[in-house]
Amino acid sequence: MYRAFWRILPGPVAVRVAILAVLLAAVLVALDLWVFPWMAATFVNDQATVGDAP
Image (cartoon, rainbow, N blue to C red; front, side):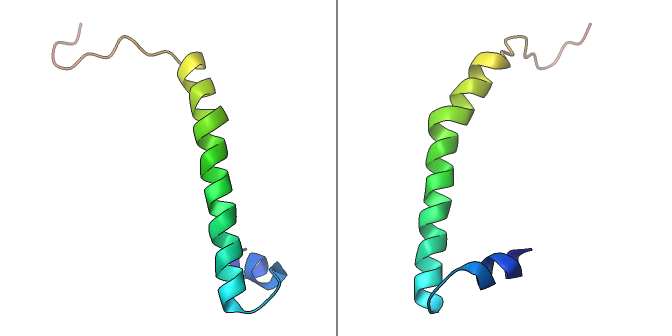
């Protein structure tokens, strides 16, 4: 699968690495701006305890 991504990208190795770095940064920004806040609001877990179990 990763080999197919590598073959799809245009240019020499340096350009491919730069494109992958930009794509990875875009995914991380999207996760930080939209996915993680949605998960924090949707899956509220305020019953975390350590130690005594009922």
